[in-house]
Each structure stands twice: as structure tokens, then as C-alpha cells.
Length: 306
Image (tube, rainbow, N blue to C red):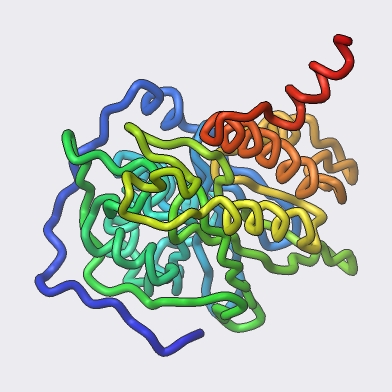
């Protein structure tokens, strides 16, 4: 891990108010925790992923979902026979309230060190999105509990607990600090590459654009190339199992429900490429619209029409 740490100027307030949104109730519906493979476990909710990676020396938790998700995540960890107090690190994908909102409460319950990218750390310590975030809104601003101290990681940095080694991959685009995490999880003699994939959805608020044509309301540079690079990076990762931050994008819960014996539908060597391909199509369409040209798919359809 890098030595950098982002420290808040004041102690984090005890803000545990739930966030209300159109999808929050559906996203936060409880689901029974389940094994992904080996020592990797799904402990998230119906629409927001959280993953526990375990070892005798301590555990690593990825993401905290909504503020109101924290008790559900703790209950899922307990239901699997583990203890929140044995979580040594909490890793964040990105600092939006639907993935980071529960982290402060989970940190207090566990005493774990919170880890994020440099930009993500700023979001965690402020409790809200920065004005360089595609989904930044000046009014209303959604605030969640702040995380006073965050360990900062960069590209290729690792977080280790006993035999566990999780690697950070910077995948900015959906947010400036987007981070995808990877590790190897073994079951008997079968070791698989697990990818906890950050969102690659080009969704934004207001008049934000990803291109040089007024990118970020003129406050940020053209970020389209870095977003495309993030998508390509995820596509190229060693990947046997993908768990996206929103499980529904790859039918994680449906695949887990269909698991039978040694047949695990979550294992799919093409999953990361498929995830990236879908995101690439959405981004290409978005960039084409911003630039006032036909997207590659639209151009192909137009050519076939003549």
C-alpha cells in the first residue's frame, strides 16, 4: 500500500440518516449472503454489492452500500459465521452514497482501516461528491457520514491481511476516483481470479459532459479517453468471476441462485469482457451525442438501411 493518508480536519460526525432515492428501497432489500468461491462471500443487498474476503488472520470488506445498509451487511457477515470485528480493511470502489454511505458505520463497528483512491478518499472524508464528479449536484447535496481517516492507494497498490492480497486498479470515468479490485480466491485446489468491478456507467447530472466540449461545465478537462481506457483495462483483467458494484448488471444474484453442487454459474471467463463491452457501447453512444455525430452502432444501422 502507499503511505498516503487523507485525514479529515475534524472528527467524523455520527450521521447515520438513511438516504432516500427512487431506487433505494429496492436496492436495499435484504438478501441471504452466499459463497462466491472459496473464501469470497457476498454480503451486500439486492441492488448494491458488498463482498467479504476471509482469512484466519482477518478479513477484508469491499464497499458499504447505503447508510441504511450497514446493519444488513453486519448481519450477513454474522450469518456466515464471521465477525465484523475481524474485518481489518474496508475497501471502496467509489465514493457515491450508494456504495460508500455505510462505510463510516462499518468502520466504527469494526475498527478497520478504510482504503480508497486519492479522489475517493476526499469524497469519503467530505461525505459528498466533489464538483468534478459527473453526478455532482450543488442543490440538493446528499451528505452521508464522513470517514475521518482514509488510506490512499494508487494503480497496482495492494492491501494485505495474512494470505489475502487485493490489488487496486484505477478505473476513473463513472467517478474521478473509481477503483476496481482484484484477488485470487481458492477452493480446494481451484484458484480463480475474482474482479470486484467498479461502475463503468456514463451517467451524469445536469449539463456535465465527458468531452472537451464543456467537460464538467468547463471545470474539468476532456475525460473521454481516460474513461475508454478504464473500460479497456477491465476487459483485459484476468477474470474468472466478476462481481460488479451493482449486482444486477451481471445477474449475480440470479447466477448464485442457480448454483448446484460444483456447477457455479458465477464462473465465466468472458464476464469482464462482456461487462466492459456493454459499458463501451453506452459510452460510445454518450460521446457521439455530445460531439453531435452518430455513434458507431447508429452509423452501422444507417449504412445497412441504404
